[in-house]
Length: 421
Image 1: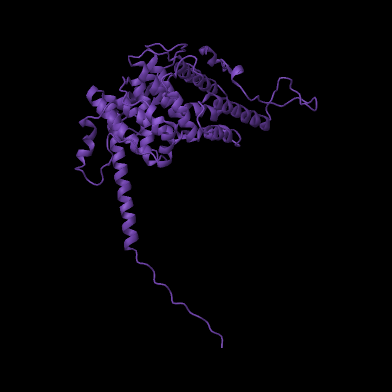
Image 2: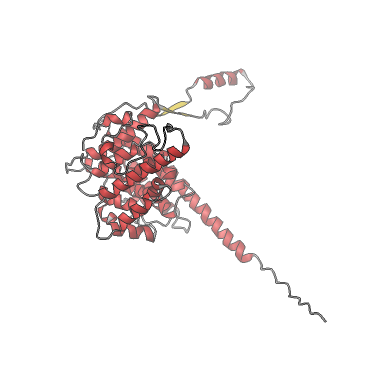
């Protein structure tokens, strides 16, 4: 598989002509079969059918790429997804398919330039269907973890397939930014309010101070402009992986819980093994009932159904574990953002929040050892917010239970039977 990485800017797939098994409705002749009226490409029905056809084509191709098992459960599941009304969305929300693809990507021979599954991810992301692109983004945590672990290991293997997928995301983000940096507005803490400045300063001194404050630059650079890259160089690797993780963060509200859970586990692995710093915040609670009762090494808080799917697909055995890697700020910044969402998102499952809590503590321990002030401030803030949120939820739950116990039950009115004479 020869990836033409520069084709991502124009939106042409390197092997789309050879990878489609189900043809989409042809519009080359611009005529119906039963008449000479031209086809309106702006017709919503035509666009909807074309999107459905593309999604079914990608799913049928994926079914041929996944390794065949003894039973036909996976094939039947993929066929059912392809026949649904929204095949791309069904593929995104299918845990069985996710773990099957994850098992294939975690195999030792994956990631090479001729890996058909990497080719499928690359072509699928370059499609115009939003849900299909979300499917690819859901595998970014796994793909990034395997790629970074193998890059920093002593085993030399070809990873051009993984790099092509990462470059596809990087190229799309570079094109969308248009060579401009990402800026954020920084509030001026010298003012009495974060939301407005005083209209009538009371003295000349305050006038001078106000004018100086207005002249201060209140804009910070969150991300510098991106340069176009056609290969993953060692000096640009952290930036490219960080941009891919940032793309995942932008769509994290659409990501399934098993993808978020995998990311939290990988983040804990990236930070390294346990150390006494991890339990620092638990000790300050005095082992109270309000402390977060999560074992630092226990990340098995998945539901029973998801756990069974992992065991059936052999995913837990193949998932890279304990891979401590360098964490420059280009990678650490989007990692902390994603962990913040997984930790504090109100709609996240409890197992995702628990895994994120463990990962943030390990990140804090790693930052404390490396004396990284930015990471220490960010991770410590997340830990404090998590503690307060759990304490508040526990107090509210206890108050609800007490109110239900103390509320007297209303006496039932005696039944009156009317008897006719």
